[in-house]
Image (cartoon, rainbow, N blue to C red):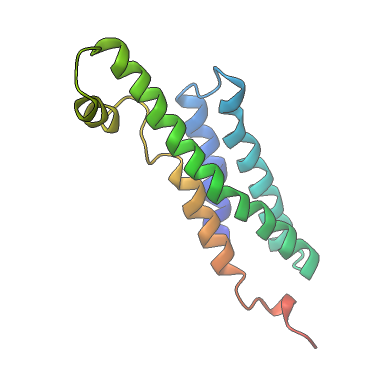
Amino acid sequence: MLLAAAVFPGTIVELILERHYDKLLQYVPFVLCIAAFLTLAIVIVKATPATIWAMRSVMLTMFPVTLFGIWQHFDGNMDFQRDIRPNADYWTQVDFAIHGAAPLLAPGILALAAGVALIATYRHPALQRR
């Protein structure tokens, strides 16, 4: 859980360094990182079934948001390619978009950290019946 908890503040720092705050939609990873860090911290300090399930709920939202982020990065790169290479065929634009300025797999760090947090609570003692 500590490993996962360390990823979220690091991701916030990286987002700030990348100036990932031009559009309203770019604040989504900030909000999710804060929510994930807070719920993880609560579970680390006081693990109860309620806190674990709250943390798991936040972590489960990371997966569709990660896919959406990957799509947003790809779509932004494609828009740029369409502007600078309007006569290129589709697959050439896709090839350049995959290697574009917005890294496609960068949002994946959220899903990776969420997966680690979910695994860390698998069969957690606080969830066991006494």
